[in-house]
Amino acid sequence: MSKLEVKKYTQIDENLLSKWNELWQNSVNAHPFNSPNWFLACREAFGYFQHVIFVALKDGKAVGVFPLVTSQKYGLRIFASPGGKYLDKNSLLLSSDNTQVLAALLFETGKLGNLDFCEVEEHFVETLKKINSDILVYGYEMNHFVPNEASFLRNLDAAKSRRIENKLEKFSAKLRYEMVSEVKKNHIDLVSQIEAESSRRHSGMGTFTDPIAYKLYLSFVKYFEGKIRLGLLFYDEKAIAYRFGLLSGKTFYETNTAYLDGFQEIMPGKLLLYLMCKSFDEEGIELLDWLRGTSTLKEEFTPYFVKQYSVFYSNSIISRFWWKLITSFFDILKNSKTIYKIINIVRYRLLAHEN
Image: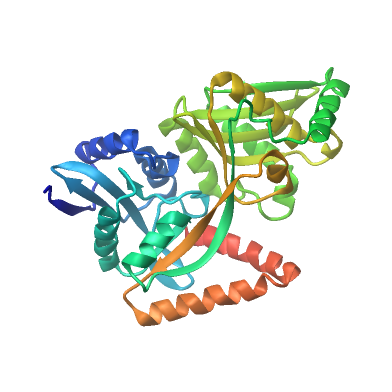
């Protein structure tokens, strides 16, 4: 029987990157957020000065990789997946859903102290709880996705589809759609500018209010070259909406979107998504993943979703108690939408500062 061993790396070199990339290329669990390029992009943008990468090996071949970085959250020093609030799926990478490999990685990572695993898929959560009963599951987010069942627009209501087509026809002389596959710095500047004049920014939830976000998206240009898709909608040659995401295999992962205030009548976000769905049909994309977060727009285009959970683990009873107390407090606040919205904006900004 092949022996399983877990090695801990505090430095990254070409040999480690090669093993990691080989596993990522062949894993059924691969996505941009557990790729070596995601780690490199985050390291460059966040300036991580301390990281640990655990690699599970069988016969010298990587069968699991779990990269972690140090951070602060709720007053505790933690180890978490790289990317902070911009992480939309967990960084854990396995060759298959192997409980033995997952248990070995959890055992070794648990020696570090406080572990915060965000955006963990439901089946992984159940396995983690079986491996260690001290695992604390403290929240989840919806992750909507659209499989290409003949067309990405298959689940869109006929009346809503006609309304979109009517808008496109009504404003056809003024609208222009563009899909960018070779994204450069000037495109990042453009999406940042659009967001600066959007309702997202005005509500305090803008991505590019955080300087690190701008650095991260510039790092995407470097490390995900040819694997970015940027949809743009123009009105009288003025860019009014964008949808940005990363490709992995035949899946498009949308990480960010915004449109200018004042153009609500045109429904720019919805029109752009509709046009991009048609482009993806032609490109042969098989799955659209809208990542975490729910919205009416997403629900109009798809009935499909999965839940992604937040998981905390620590050998310290005091740390587990404190984490449960804080997260329970936030759960109570959710019952008051107004208070929760204010607290969430404050927390969003605090996490940006901590990351």
